[in-house]
Amino acid sequence: MIDAPWTSNYQPGVPAEIKIPDQPLTAMCAEAVERGGDGVALDFLGAKTSYADLGEQIGRVAGALRDLGVSRGDRVALVLPNCPQHVVAFYAALRLGAVIVEHNPLYTADELATLFADHGARVAIVWDAAAGKLAGLDLDRVIAVNLLEAMPPLKRFALALPVPKLRANRDRLHADAPGTTPWRSLLDADPLDEAHPQPSVDDLAVIQYTSGTTGSPKGAMLTHLNLYANAVQGAAWMKDAVDGREVIYAVLPMFHAFGMTLYLTFGVLKQAHIVLFPTFDADMVVSEAKKNPPTVYCAVPPIYEKTAKRAIERKVSLKSARFCISGAMALTDATVELWESVAGGLLVEGYGLTESAPVALGNPFWPTRRTGTIGVPFPSTLMKVVDPEDVTREVAQGEEGELLLKGPQVFQGYWNAPAETAEALLEDGWLRTGDIVTVDADGFTTIVDRIKELIITGGFNVSPTEVENVLRSSDAIDQCAVVGVTDDAGAERVVAAVVPAAGATIDDQQLRTWAKQRLASYKVPRTFVVVDELPTSMLGKALRRQVRDQIRDRALEQLR
Image 1 (tube, one colour):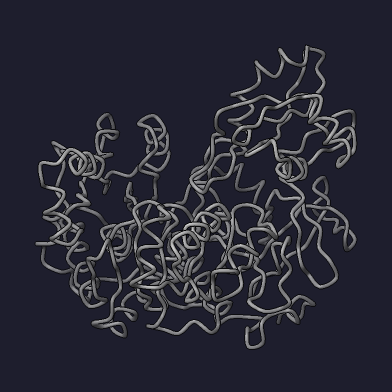
Image 2 (spheres, rainbow, N blue to C red; image 1 turned 120 degrees about the vertical axis):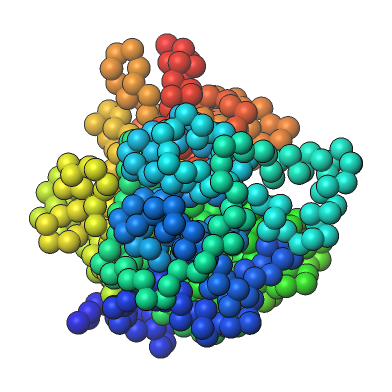
C-alpha cells in the first residue's frame, strides 16, 4: 500500500496505485481492436486504418512471420520510422512471443551492425530506404517496407508525376531494395490461428537500446508487464482522456522509448485515433490541426516551441490539445507560457528512462504542478534519494543524491550485460537512475545532473545543466553544451561549445564577465568554442560525450 506525501498533489481521482496487468500486450491490443471496431486507429498522411483492419493486418503478418520461422523468444528487428507498418509489425511479432528490437533508421551501417551483433536478430523489418545499411549482415530475412504504399492513392499518384521536386520527395521516401521480401507479400498470408499460444505477461517483449550518452548503448529488457503497466499508469495520470475519443499526434519516433509507450501501447490501450508523422515538421502538424485537431500532444521542448510559433504565425488554433507532457530535457517557464497561450490544457514535465519503460514521474494535470521540476512518482511507483557512493544510505530531504526507482515498469536488466545489470538494478528491485536530484517535502523532484556528466574542477562539482541554463539566457547564444576537458596539467576545466545567436559574435572575455555575475567563478567556462551546430539525440538533446570529442582539440589550444 503506497502512503506517500506526493499522492496528495495528484489530480483528484488519480489513484495512488494501479491494478497490475495480468495479461500480455497482445491481449490488450486484441481488446482494443474489438472495442475500437470501425473507429480510426491509424492516420498516415490522410490514409486511415480502422481498428478492425489493424487487427486483421496484425493477424496476417503474424501468420507470415510464423511461416518464415519466427517463434517464441526470437528477436525481430524493426528499422522503421513512424508508419502504419511499424504498428502492425510490432504487434504481429509480439503475438508469436517474439521479442521486438527497435532501431533508428537513420543510424549508420556501422551503428546498426554493432546493435545486431549484440541482440542477434535473424529477421529484420526495415524501411526500404534504409535496407542497404543491412547488406553486410548475416540475416535470414530482410522484409522491406515501402512507405509510399501506406499513403492515400492521390498522394501516391502525385509523387509518381515527372516533377523534379516530387521526384526528390519520392526518392527520400523510397528506394529499391533488391534481395529483400516486400512487406505487401506478408499481407497475403493466412491469418495466425487464434488458438496459437499467447505470450506470457512476464515474457520479454522489447529490447530497447539506451542512447549511449554515458557509455556504449545497452539493450534494456522490457517485459509485456513492464510496458502494459506503464501504459496503464499513463492512462491513470491522464484520467480525463476518454477511450475511443482522443486524437494523438505521433510526432516523436516510435523507435524511442517515449514514443513507443505514447503511441504503440498507451495510444492502443485508449483506442485513440493515432496520427502518424514520419518525421516532425511544424507546418505539417499545424496543417493537420486545421482539419483533425489533436487532444494529446506529447513532445519535447523544442517541438512545443516550434509548433506554437508556427500555429501563431498561421493563426491556427491548438485549443483542442488538453493533455501535453514534455520530457527528455528541462522545460522552461518561457516554453510553458508560449505553449499554454495557444493550447487548451496544461503543459507538464515528466521524467523517465528507457529502463523504466520509460515514464516514472510526472507533474499533475492540476494546479499543483510545479514547472522546473520533473514532478512526483507515477501511481504504483516508489522513489528514494541516496548517497551515490553508498546506496544503502538515504540522504536528508532537500539534500542532493541519486534517484532510485521501484515499480512495475522497471526493467529486467540489460541484454547480454550481467555486470552492467548488477550495477543498475539492485537486489531488492530498486533501479539506480544515475541522476542526481533534490526532493522537497511534497515529493516534487528537481534534477541536478547526471552522475557521469558532472565536472570536477578544483575539487568542486559543476553541473553542466546549471551552467547551460544560465548561458542560454544570454542574447549572444542560441544553443550550448557544457563539458569537462582535461588540460595539459591534468586538471578538468569547464568548457562551453556554443552556437551563436543570429548576428551575434562571441567575445570570450565579455561572456565570462557576464557569466560571473550569475555563476560561482569555478562554474564559469574557462573558454568558449564556437561551433555551427551541436550533435543531438533523436529528441534534440545535446550529446555531451560527442560534443567533448568534437571540441577537445580546439578547447585545449584555447586553454594553453
